Image (cartoon, rainbow, N blue to C red):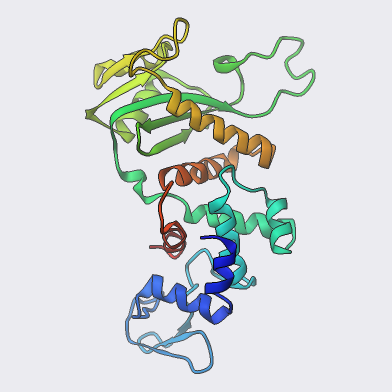
Length: 290
């Protein structure tokens, strides 16, 4: 959904609230405190009264919009901007678009990313699944390596991120916060995210992947010789890494390890729902706890 459509469909705060109520309750308001359906609207307010626990509530209670002081129309515009930005958008850019300060824009964006935690993460990948890892982080400060050259790739001190992608399907990523990438970690991730009985894993020649053949069909592409060998390649996963890194370098410039998983979830969410005609409503539903 584009910004022009947001202003057309939701010109007032009441229109925004009516839409949220329809998505969350489907015309049957339910108390978020006691889950009772014995409710009645409060006259002249966008709130409801629970006849069971004698409290009043609005549709934003216990959602990403809870206790917000921003107009909901601005939330909807921000959501449209984030969903339509293939390489995401920085807090500074969002603050300029919404006429709010940077801290408000950052808080709003992080709330939106919370709604973008994909419920389909519970579904297992199957078929041809590519697996690869990348490393996120800036260059070491001058003198931090005590005169030793900075090591690239697997020799770096950056934060490793492991990704699995189903050909033509979803991508699932995981940040390795210990910064130690081992065969045991990789094996556990495959068992967690992949239907090993219905899949074939494609990886590069790194020794850390070699134990996968013990419990799943495993094929290797040797990058020292070629990058594509018939169906054996990891180009799909590497394309995702390329988009992710362009977003981090070009938009955010840098991200903290503390919040890295949230940014990766955002890129994964957009990839997994690419072409979804109702992505705005789906994300709103996620933000409402649906």
